[in-house]
Image (tube, rainbow, N blue to C red):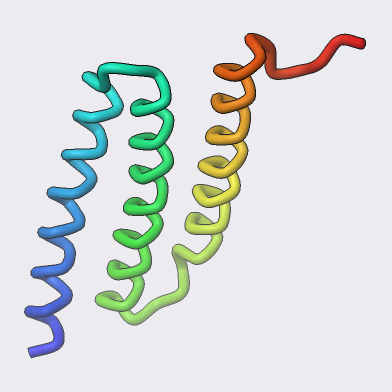
Length: 91
């Protein structure tokens, strides 16, 4: 029974990933795209975590860590670029 619940969760999360991807591509404004990209990263982390539970392994824990770090840094960099026009300050 637990496997069926996990499969249902994977289907729902796949749908959520698809919606976030579409919002990232078609988003009307740049802030919408940044938020959708961040949500895509969070959903991807959850999707991989559910796969880890389903396969009863911890093999993908490093992948989750790398994706979370890249998602965080990417969101911060894009937000800073949107606000100031440059990622690195040249003083």
